[in-house]
Length: 167
Image 1 (tube, helix red, strand yellow):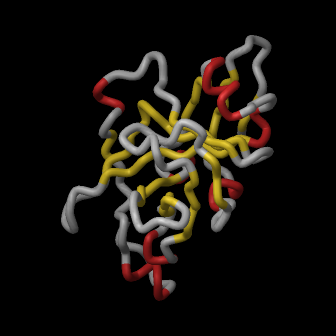
Image 2: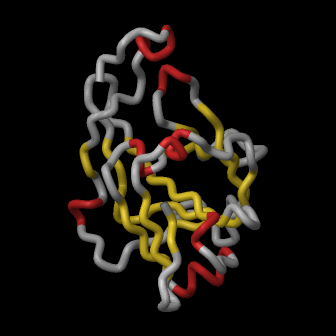
Image 3: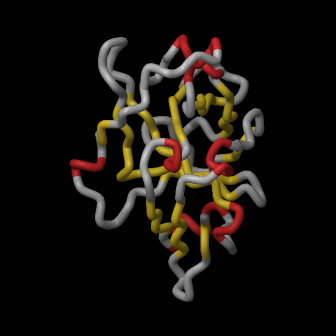
């Protein structure tokens, strides 16, 4: 669960809980600086992909066809995940408390027969109190955190029918 720290740096610790399955799907978030590679796109909508896609969501440019990113809440794919939010990012999204922070990680798809990877080096952080978000590069991140293999398949038809999953 997110928590406050005494320093000016906010640290959110995300642990697997029932809350990890809840999301503000359908809401439009403002990304004042865009996201790397798409700085001109400043409004994104978080959309569900459906039960057959398990914990994965789409972060789609609002009112546009592209870009669309596959994302997940870290608790759905990793046991614990600490996020350090630097002062510049806190100011950009107007973060005063980490109690209303949504953390997402970008998922990279590698084809139908390969498991996806998650970018744990630069999570997306959204201040749910005002709907502003940004991508935050972690200060101690290394190249190994850019493509962390995860064991949750992106698509599983068994999940759509309520049968036991293949994962």
